[in-house]
Picture 1: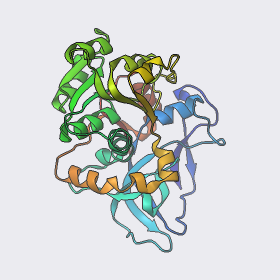
Picture 2: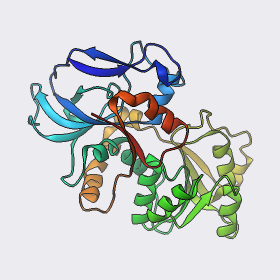
Picture 3: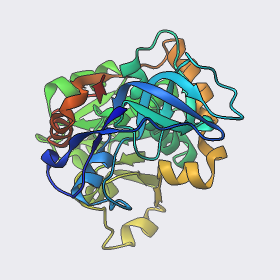
Picture 4: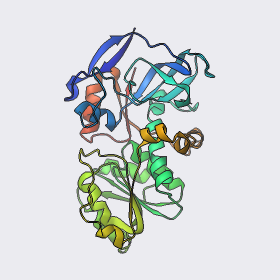
Amino acid sequence: MAKSIQFTEYGKSDVLEIVEMDRPEPKLGQVRINVKSIGINFKDIRQRLGFVPVDEFPFVPGMEAAGVIDAVGPDVNRSVGQKVVARVDNGGYSEAVTVNEEFVFDIPKNMSFSEAAGFPVQFLTAYGVLFNRGNLEADDRVLIHAVSGGVGTAAAQLANNAGAEIFGTASTTTKLNLAAELGVDHPINYTEKAFEEEVRRITKGRGVDLVLDGVGGEVFARSLNALAPYGSIITYGAASGESGCVNDTTRLYSGNNAILGFHLTNMIKDSPERILPAIGDLSGWLARGELRVIVGKKFPFEEAGRAHDYLFNRESTGKVVLTL
């Protein structure tokens, strides 16, 4: 038997409950992981709230799980005992998960299970929005919203290593100090200053070449006013609970601007060759210390509800994880 965290209805964090389930057996091409740490993502919260509907109840959320392989199915090249992290569609909030081998990645020797659990979704998303969709180049100016969060801290490091000039928004001095430590040239407290006006001031009216927006709502709309000519917004989420909306396309065509989307799960399903090869580069950079996973807070497995509330209430910096 193995414990899992599930919900049987949409609602607040108290709908999450721990249940005992049979340990899954790996099928053809799968491995089973004895889970040590689990990554928490905004998608998990949006699923629980019903903003991202689930197929059926009961439902076990979770997209990232790090641990040790304890069983393998037929036609698998992995071995029992290997330390790995996996990107799973759902079901990661469990003591044991089965995963297709192609979505299982080695953990660099210098990385803990908690750090590994913050690697697949955040760093693949950051890589995807910056390079797959954003075509970031050296000396480009990029604005990263929620720069102290999981994706934000990954994107800041990747953009800094690529030679970009980085603007980043956050709400507290602690978060802004972390952003500066990770290479953000212009940390902006969005509670004190209108970020689009600050970007215009610093760039002498020109704006930025790329905006990474996982917030949506008003932030997305205002980001249009931070774009330089030929600049782009990459939208990859709606952590605010509201989707971004363009009411007037004049700003787009007059500035030769673009809005592009990025969805990690769908890219992995539809075109894995576009994104999964990045794992090799990312793992190498992490192993050499050129990137690091920022783990902001660890919660015991049994406190998944508290972890959800902590992330949802914008208390977090870096990655929030569950530990077993």
